[in-house]
Image 1 (cartoon, rainbow, N blue to C red):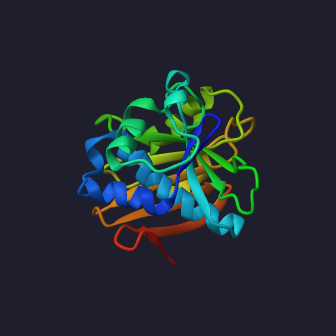
Image 2 (image 1 turned 120 degrees about the horizontal axis):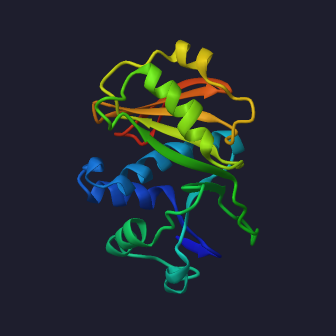
Image 3 (image 1 turned 120 degrees about the vertical axis):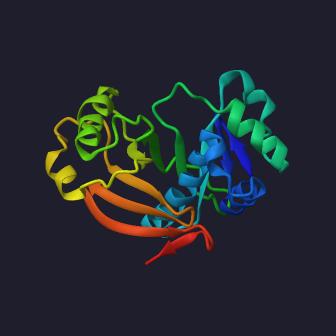
Length: 210
């Protein structure tokens, strides 16, 4: 792990070890869920960049001096950083960056904003999701981040209707990706705008099943 500037970086294997230490109880804390989603995004970006990547989290200003420039942290220290010291008031929840080699400067790579949909029992259907994307999420300022929506609805989402109904003119995000947890064994990944197909991330192997 290496912290550089305001970002604290975690390698994929560190995040896997950390989540396994939680006995796969990902729903016990929203930050654990975000880390789990970050693993999927990390693997996605590695395919995009054809390069090894790692996960960058922005640290609150008051904690930046406590984060080492380089070195290792215990699982307990990672837990405190992830749950208490990560910046919340920001348009970007996670950065996926190429891992530096041969003294290269760390670049920010791709930025992602994570949103959860379906926790409200009265807003779980496709129409509610369309409204969420077209209205609620469009209120954000223009950013170079991609929007990741974690679907937690028990109702089936009509992806074709969703794709036909979203209004992307002037949209503040550059991509919209849906992610859903299946039977605690898989994470389903759907690129809905620009449309980029689907894939399944295996929580046993921590890799995509293509």
